[in-house]
Image 1: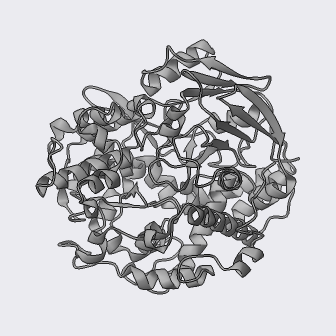
Image 2: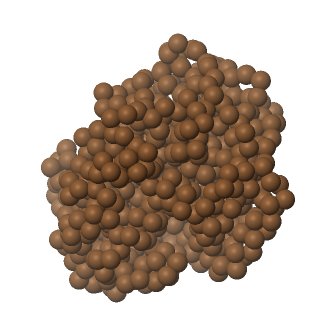
Length: 599
């Protein structure tokens, strides 16, 4: 078996049982790994009767066939569960060494269910898996826990850990991976906290078997040439990190400000990649096997840490009408220590700011009040005062006050940093994403702004569904392999297929990746339909549909979503209610009444 270790570890925290299973060969061929394995297991085992924060919900950590190889940007790990923020099927992925170490320990996946009676951590290595006491870690911040565990294990492990936000079941709590990686979105940290699971250590020395090492080395050589030839992956991201796009997105009138009341403002320059490089930059780092190196280590007058990333300067900065770079950076460091998703944190605070602006409820902070930002973040993590309401996320917070139109979210997941009124394909991507508002399901910024793979009219509302679906399917496949999105700016699907073929020995073509991605997308859709989601949930906030942008290059724009949805469903082979056609499912080897079995 080339590319896979062939085993899945299953840990039941309620009973303390630890078992191993072999991977079903048919499922390996249908889903490959990563996100595909995750949805397959979730669809088989977790139905509507299981609440996200109940012991029965699963945490499914999955690697891909290229994890642990030298393939560029392949050092990632996927995590699947039912989200406490959205109620949907959810997957998140993170960079770093953790996925590689899980593979070296001899496992393609780790499934965790149940709830421990007291705080614990899990220790995984190639010889055994142990459940250990973590009472001394409970209550500690993420990096402190990681540091203590590495000291105990003599730094020979990779560690994921939650912080106080996960322990307190904040619905958008994150999980930190070692010092810099993050499972950020959807409240995966709260699911971990609900199980009294503080951390997981992994280590191993096993090697991934390669079918054709010579061919793999050649394809890696070729892909690195493409990465070096692309200005974004060879200059922009290495030089300025993800905030390299701040000024460009703002100049197009797409950078959301003040809870999306506008999407263009000159002050955004203070939070740009150029300013970060000038004012607080220390050094850049990279995940293993990554030739791009987009990570930034920064330092303010008071602190040192990771980031802030593009999405964070948007959420904790512009959305809150705060343009002080050091304040935003320190708020970002704080979120990482407490274990909070910076996107949902900032957008939820921005929602509270607007509700105060409109006289609905006073959460104790107004737009631009930068000196109060860190305190309200702490209140959210520890569920203190109004922070207890904000810890539910923007939608449930606003719904409590009958003001849900001011929550910038889809299916409960807060918006990323692109106002879809100025790029209609991105709006359709948000609306149709199976996990809620997400730019990574289909990065339509590529064709609508950057011209990757080609430039299209960002204001057009028709003719985009085919391209959107192609990108959604491809990204589902890449989340299964598992690759970083940034490599996709330079590497074509043909090279991804050649990398898989070299590692596994299978003859994989680009169209095979499309089929696998489409299968995953449709199974995720079936999962959400079974949970009660429907066309009515493929919706954007009314602000996007009815309130024209007031200024900037996208001035006057709104989104006519219904027509775009009709076209999209038709191209997907779904009916007008958004339900996949039986013929489509049969073609993909799916059956809505048949459970997929992973083992």
